[in-house]
Length: 486
Image (cartoon, rainbow, N blue to C red; front, side, top):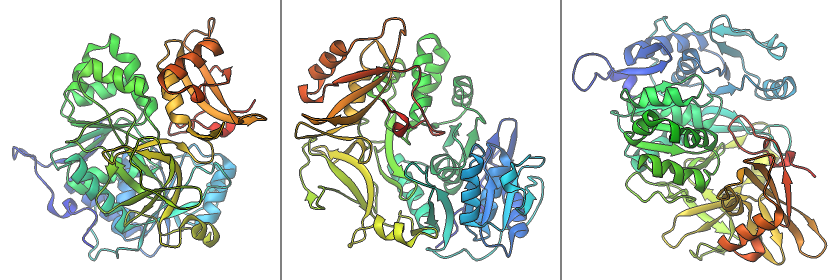
């Protein structure tokens, strides 16, 4: 396989020939491709001979340089979430056993890392890019899952998966070296690190990281040359809320080539508010830690709210019933579990052969645990997670996602989550967890049930409503439904 970053050998110039192209910018600090090649080459020399190498993934220039340097050295990178608790961090360190932890200079590490060998990344250092790329199936990353059903598992992602996913997205999004990406995503996860940093660098384009997400930074960067924005639904919700009073934000977004949302479903209400204010539609894609990206709306396709597009080149995707039989109906109604197969997949859960074996079918498809329907045009619409979002009520299989979208269209609802709970008659009854727009006048059950029934079907209406001040969310903005208890 060719290098993950061919531009580090070419040092691309600006289109007008006025100088070297910027590769990375974090706030006021930046590196050209020549500077990145030198600094990452120094890191590669620094880690030579190590096994796995961890990086303390703060939103800083050093994290990106360290990650690129480890990959140039052909070693597996373990991104560490700086917000992990001591118990989780200790588990990840014991499980992945990195020989070295890379940090920005002066970083204060928690006690769990006290015994770990440490090296600081110097973005001004110089070293040669190593010759001889690693093999297709050599591990590029060990990324830990969120651990919602037990201790986090380390998904071993091969170099082939990184390259094929980024190239498939380049095809779907018409992503080129002329693109400048802006985002404020964390760098310990696939979305922010692989798509948001490695993606632009593989294309020979540029990435501008905001450090911390804010609509002011989005406006500034899109108004000064950035062409693409990556975000999670929480970020786009904040954008939608800010748009009515911020014409400069609306203007900046309207000039972007591509607005992409991922990591969770973007509510239809926010889709429509952004489109109405900017004339631009946010496109969605679907992926997981173990699979990188599986589907996406294409840049030249129709961005319909609620769909995540069609399978990317090289990805086989099928929906199956509970007994494993394939669903062939593209009717927008028949719910099944998504299974995928292709070069984008991880190879194993580190030190967990039992979990690895259980994750795959006999014919090599990965069981995602996500439930979806296929629309008549073949596009995929996610309705929720099998474990937390599939509700069996009155003989129907119901996805929580479409009910949540319907609830969010009610003017009295600011945030919504839907779960199921045991019911002696229905099997499970639908429970709506609501953050009201006005806490002093929350919408009543009868009002919300009628609202949902009118938009979907009577059997999809909530039978119970519970009001909250806020929904529990993780670092990526996903609602933690297991924390929602009566």
